[in-house]
Length: 124
Image 1 (cartoon, rainbow, N blue to C red):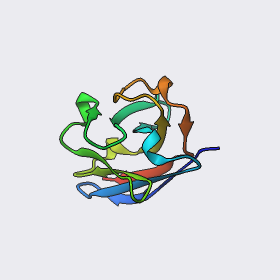
Image 2 (cartoon, rainbow, N blue to C red):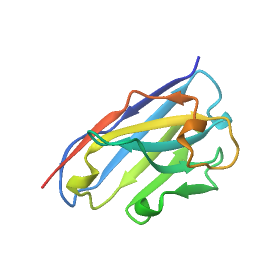
Image 3 (cartoon, rainbow, N blue to C red):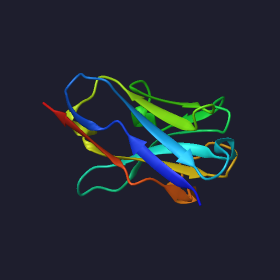
């Protein structure tokens, strides 16, 4: 059984930076491509970025390029999302997910394992 657990959310101010973490257990971490997505109240879940098993290949939503960076540390079974210059519009629940697909994808329906999410609130 695969467990995905996010951490690092909280209340921040406009312009702050936050790094979210996501750990995976249950199967070898390098089995998985990982992704981050988010869901704001009343909105659809939105893809942010994905990263292949080695970290060498990434994919970003166009609107997320520049301020958000995905990375992973396979020695720690952890994937990260660095978020810079946060805005109130970034307020959402942030989710981590895993899939066995090799190439980074933005199709969230391809991801099999999901965490419970971590909330990020950006105050004006």
